[in-house]
Image (tube, rainbow over all chains, first blue to last red; front, side, top):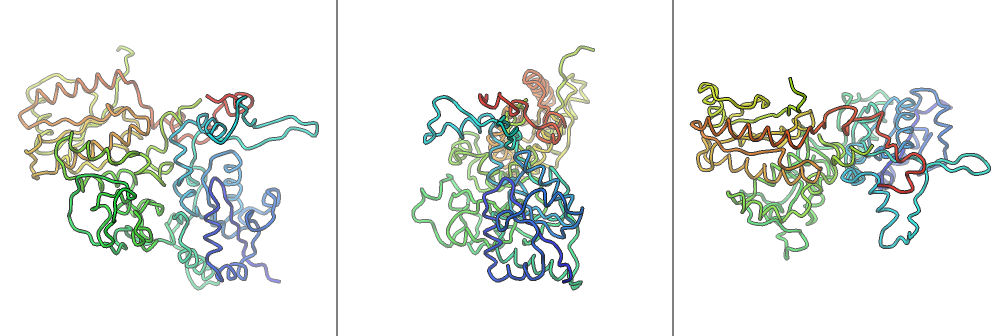
Length: 329
Length: 162
């Protein structure tokens, strides 16, 4: 049997939706199996970290890495898979820019742990928290240690390609799988290193079927507070904070097309250095007011401005985290 | 030399009013704090909030945005855009733990050299009181990679997080 190129997929700080999206490629998954030897994919098969450690450096052709780097286990696997892989792809929004887990960068890590073990449904009167190491008769046990902030993959290791989306659309994944198979067969060439793959080259607005005018708005409202939402008109022009203007195309404007605002999961559009900054500009452009008082009154309609403009992108933004989070000593 | 903290401040000025105000302050030999490094834009409406975030993440302690008075913009209404961006940007910065006072918006016409000088000095003093931001310092900022394991997460302190 001739050796097939090796494929790996790993999840760090993520939800598992990226794995589901890969399986959602339906029969295309059979092409992966036909063309690759799947050597490591904790969600789909049994494999041990020591098996990966025993592999030769660079012996895995393609690794899809989803999830951000939140603890020392994530970091170890990121470095290990970088070492063992020829092509390391930051797969999905978490690995590319932090995604929803990246919003935890708004709080110091101690506060996060405290919240997790003291929610309304968690009865913890004695304030008991997990330890990262514990002595048992058989030896010392360890659980992963949280880092003070979550980092996208690129801030930890060198990344070859980026594939954004929460999760990446299955038709985009299928196209990328096809491309890699063609490259393996010598029928196509890889895009330049550092490319964002499986995406469009414009913004969600460009793919959005809704009509855009130059209407200005007097108030921002949450979508659930507007009835009925105009099905033809741009959502931003209806006063709904829609993240489309800053967001990379590639999803066929799925959310606005279905009547919900874009939340920005495909990350910054081409040429956008800071996603939040671009959205600040976009939202400001529709505000119909010229006095600070009136503008502030309209802005009160966005209850969580930081979360709104950095919903998926905080860990990958210029400032990356709340000051209190990274100042923790 | 005293040991007092000297803030680094980036100032964005518009070509038609506030840059000329700073020019006037200079030719009139008015004294004002030297901490502001000016960058001239054609208009305050050119101010992309990215510029401010880039400045703060790269080591600036404060950012001053200046433009023509409302109603007097060379490009008719672009300074209103700057105002709207500024107000939303301050809210976003607040959520990131950056005091909104670190970003200031000043209107100054070409004739207001004295106002420009006074506002600059006042801003420098305000930032001096707030202290350094230190966002871009590799060992102390969110960029840190090798030193970012919080010490309290090792061992028993984990049991009683702050």
